[in-house]
Length: 223
Image 1 (cartoon, one colour):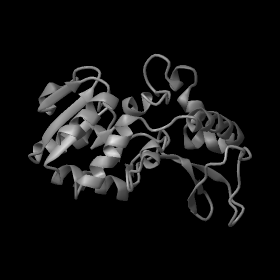
Image 2: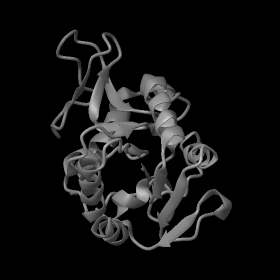
Image 3: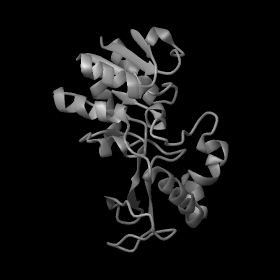
């Protein structure tokens, strides 16, 4: 399973792209790069505090819950997500491969400590309770590489899949966009769930048009 922003949009999480997306009002090069954080960590953290407050009120929708139930039912189920909102975890997914990171985790630039932090009253910027170093959001910024271990696990899951569902994503952002292609080439049956037809229909076997929160529970009920 590969999920994107369309899944969380049904929970009210703003999308990064498209009309009304977060990037429509902010320049990502000013707020989501290592250079921006080095230049003004307080400014970057104020923006992330705003994002965290927006997402804090969002709750998992039927699509998130259906995927958690699928994981409970199916041995060998793997959930790969491009989303950083943490809603899959809140829905009960035990080990989502969050290849772009998680907005609710922080990482120390000095000692490398990584931990979940859901408080909304963090200082801007916060410091590490272990060593006093500067904490950053544990998300992948523009210009950064994805975590190699997570990416390798995602590739392995795609290449070993019998069935792969691509849900709520246009699958145009690489390397995530290549996962469905890799699964297809390895012999998987690829199903896309989205509001619009796939941009490259040759990469999928079936395209189910509709909201993920409606389509996935129906698939679960039929399984």
